[in-house]
Image (tube, rainbow, N blue to C red; front, side, top):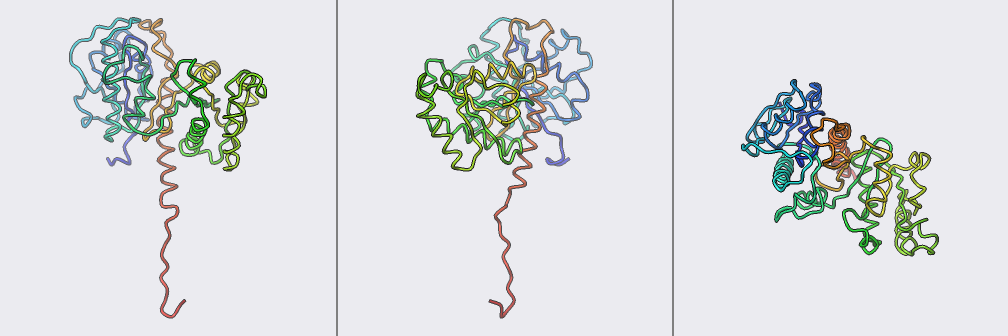
Length: 355
């Protein structure tokens, strides 16, 4: 089977195994039909996954244990055995060992995409505290993948109803205003615009930009960032023939009439965009890291220690993350094919005597 004809291979990192990551992975893959659409490649160990499979009574799941990514079997649930030792799981607890294994899984999964053995990456949730080490010193997946894959990563929360990008991501609230500039706002708008065109096949996207301050600054009464930073950037985009509007007051923007009009929303900071997104798209949202060389998605929830090991975690967001990654990968390939050699000209052969 040629590379072109084989099923898309989805690299899956397990995240913090004391949380709900492995549970939602297994719940997603328990349907036998799933491997008809793609080939899952989980980076962890068969012992670890089998332990949780038995707890969930998922007798129909069978793993294809492999030692190296060059042994992937298409149409099977592949598990790359990164470690052989038995692992002690402490559901709902924060342990150093879980953070170390989460990083090993993420590192190997991301490398498999870089090397072309897998096509896209879907990550289960990590604890950004216990994963920290000399090798992993990032606020989250987004920043880590920006370094190992290259590019300018954009946290893009997407669902059928809503797409939200962020100017600032994982930073303290007191640093938000000083981190917003005309350059950063413009760069994020361009990243969103590029992703909507190339990843979502929207030829002329409409983007809404939120203000930073309450009531979008109230014409300078509640802050000057809208007048001095955000409005000039929006005008620059309009001058470039891009459909960018705002700044809108965040407290009243997220209503159905606005969501039906715009293809994406740019929020100034994490909670300004994500509170609304997770309320509107609960259990359906996907975290997509746009702006990178390869596609990475994840569910829009965290490790959920409070329900870990209870068998009640909802897998819908993880399932959506997988199918979103596949769709985004296909859209990218189609865009590349459509735009390849667009300006290439065919030389004319003139007959003798013609001018």
